Image 1 (cartoon, rainbow, N blue to C red):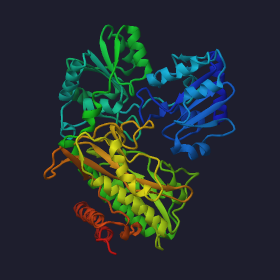
Image 2 (image 1 turned 45 degrees about the vertical axis):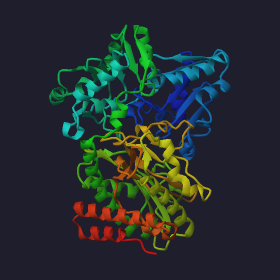
Image 3 (image 1 turned 60 degrees about the horizontal axis):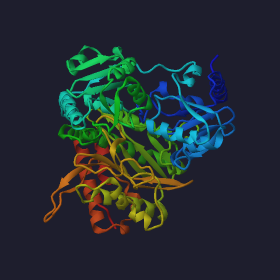
Image 4 (image 1 turned 45 degrees about the horizontal axis):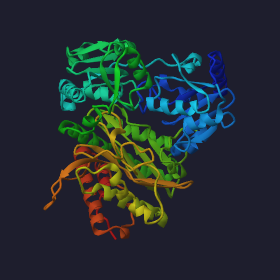
Length: 604
């Protein structure tokens, strides 16, 4: 009999833990590759608890259980996970180890799946448990899988070649670069677990994970440039075999442990963020020496070549058409009071699909009307769905996956017919000023994302307000919409990537915001390309940004009097370029007339 309630599933898991002589179990949102988005087969936390967020975890003990989420999901977790059975814990204020140390007895055995956790997490949690006389126990199989009776199988989708003219470089050249890196670091091989790194390295794409075109697999690259690709055989056809060439050996995904065992006596590079604890364990048992080093693919993947930039521009042009047509429809229909968040999501998806070559969305569209927009990572469902009420703020954050590139754009819209009130215009304009400050920033080579972050916040700080998320993240080339290692965010506080130097060729988002709990949210997001800048008389190599996203910004929300002359000129220039691109991709006179009206020079 299937377990239809989350209470029944929790009870079944506790029975399974008791059978295994375990006092508790840790449940992350994770797969064997530490991916941001995971396939349905790995959605163990959602199955157990009902939580639908993209980041979170749980601990189940015999007599209590707790959910762990960060500030993005404080409201959502309480709406989706029953407080009768679960406590709510905030991270990073509380870690798994700290909570366990307070809630388990001496001698307790807490299980974990070593294929779903990083080694650093294991060391920290084990230390916390040992301090109270308890034990962290690696398990050979996941106890949730034993009670999840209708658990989906991993995706059987075929992997596909990614053309060299889109990639801009052959897989052989990329593997040779990794081989040189291995020799420089005195390593014999590298285990690549990150799915987007594998896709980039082999010039392949897949359809195994929502929003990210990757194939479930592992790669072991040797210092001679050859590679072993561990992937389900049914995913690979003759065309893909030919594309890979004879320097890439194909093995089943379930043979990865055997492949690791064959590395005995060798120095093997493993990334601590994407290489799960089990990989280290198998290597050490086999007699290999794991060497903790950052994935050698991460940085070159982040620095886009000319072909990748060209493909991204083409993807952005498709978004210019699709998102502009969506905003025109919204402008005409939303003030009537009949449009809701889900209808807006559907309409935007259809516009992207009609623009041609859409393969997927790059994440679940954030469609937040009024107070729902005040949750930066809000995800609409049938229960939370609300109408776009007249005279209110609507926030929509969305993106598409196209063969040439990955897009991500946020627009904040005033739903008329009346004019926005002064506070909304003030906050929107401060966000816009911060957005412009990032877009126009000039900075010396060697500057980090953490050093740039304050440019975006300064005008909000002047009013005594701020936003709780980062200002910018890296974006992939028809890969992950959130791509490291670069990030624009406040330094410290566990913000990975803020110490990474920004290099020419990196694509980032530029998305300052403001959120008033219970009322509205504001965010303006474009993607930007890091480029070299020619500064007369400069004594340093100077970088700056080039805007990639061109969709009208809602001029009704701009308090023109708050802008400097340079900022006004930026808005007018941005809109002039938006109209120019729109004319090249749109042929409907009504659509173009609407875009032209939105892109007219600012007045006042």
